[in-house]
Length: 274
Image (cartoon, rainbow, N blue to C red; front, top):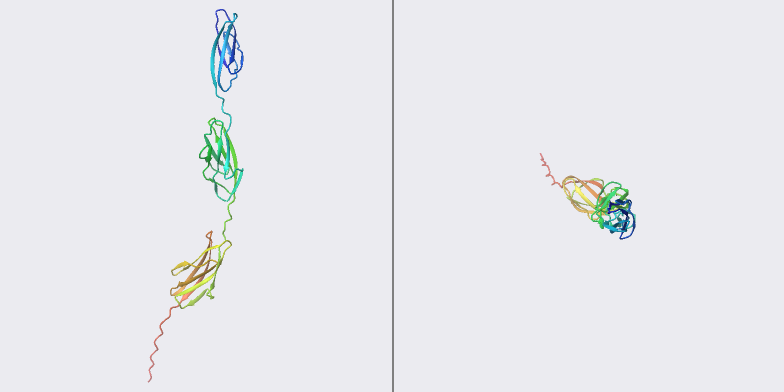
């Protein structure tokens, strides 16, 4: 909108205008005139206003208007990793998203939010990446927002389904097969050899032993295991054999061995004959 005044020694008969890049018209009024609407094109608009009198004498005034259109276009954001699809399934408890964003003017910020909880800033703008986003079991709806300096925001939604791997809670089974004796037995040697078997729904990773009177070690083998030269202390020795799987589940068995040291023979009693 443009308004102004015009004067003449006799009278102003008409005020007109034209825009150098297109458009013209007649103003309302003469000595006090106004133009309600002048359409502008992006860039420089040179608008000339003419005042004419009855003798067709003309006076002109020029105004230059630089039109910078308001940015109403939102940025476009896309996710390229871990997949270009709109959904992703993982057994990991966190995920990192990355992608690209573009705008007709600029991208000043990329943000993320998880409908299941959590939000923050991504690193970078045109090429961006989130930090590790913690996931809850099931569907996690993650929104990526790209914002420009005019406040326009473009969004992209990504669904990450978190399905934890089945947790192994089954302990191994273990048993002693040699020596084939009772759980409690006597021995007169300072060492003993033990052997046996162990099994698990996934796998046995190690078999160990421990003597309650002191001493511990690793057996040889897993599903079939052996312990050679296990040292004993005099008296009862409680030996614990432990089988462990990859998840740390343990199965145990016990054997009690009484080590009886050899005693020197007693001297015969004296016999007196009368």
